[in-house]
Length: 144
Image (cartoon, rainbow, N blue to C red; front, side, top):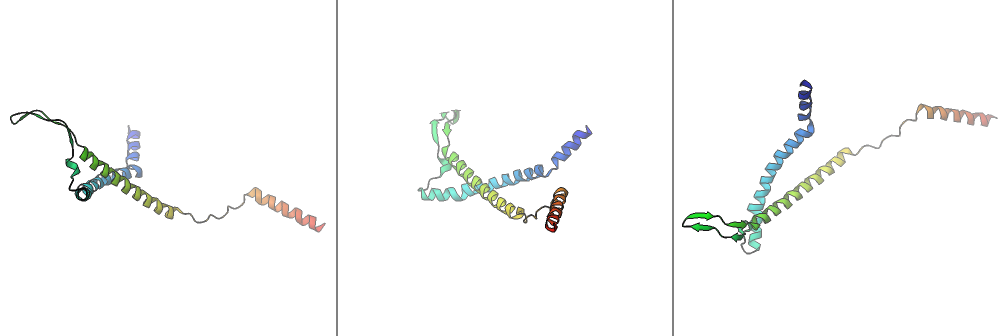
C-alpha cells in the first residue's frame, strides 16, 4: 500500500500533471473570454454588416408547441442553427489562438535550445595509440 501511495504521489506532483491542470484551468477561462469575444463583439459586427441579423436567434422550428390555454402540452421541436454557427466561430477563434500560441512557444524554444557548436570529441585511446604508431613508422621510414 505504501508503494502505491508513493507511486501516486510521484505521478501527481510530476511537472506534466501540474502543467496539464494549469492548462485546463486557463483553457476554461480562455474559453469564456473567447465566447464573450464572439457573442459580444464579433457577432454584433457581423450582424451589422448582414443587416441586423442576430445569429443566436436563428432557428428552424420543426414542430410548433401544442398548447391548451397557457399550458404547454407538447413543447416545440427546434433546430437552433444560429447557436451552432456561433459555436463554430468560437471554435475557429480558439483553434487559431492556440495555433498562434504554440507557434510562438515553439519559436522561443528553438531560440533557447540552439546549442553552441559542439567541439569535436577527443579521439579515443586506441585512435591516439594508432596515431602515435603511424607517426613513429613515418619517422623511421624518413630516417632510413
